[in-house]
Length: 67
Image 1 (cartoon, rainbow, N blue to C red):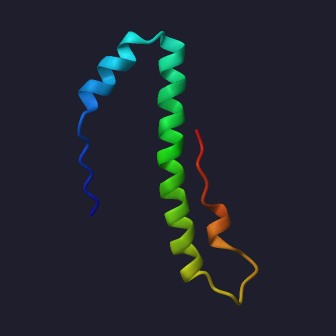
Image 2 (image 1 turned 180 degrees about the vertical axis):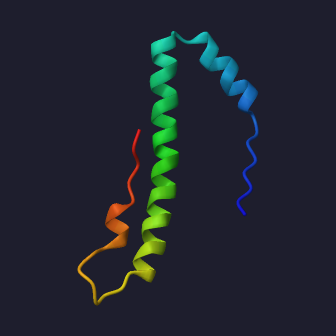
Image 3 (image 1 turned 30 degrees about the horizontal axis):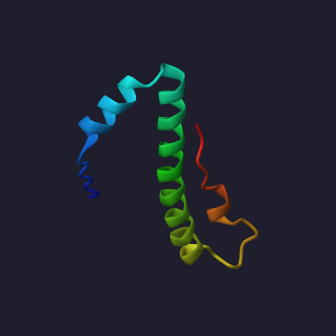
């Protein structure tokens, strides 16, 4: 089970509300992408450990961030 605690989210939301909509959307998207990349890298590292070297397929290559 994974537990996540976010602190200061209301402050971030208030600052984003003050920005023009397009700029806020881009900032949010960049931030989410950076966070997703951290998770992707961890998942790839874990997948490499369980990959079967006797097969041609590489499980970790199929892990990607998509929007």
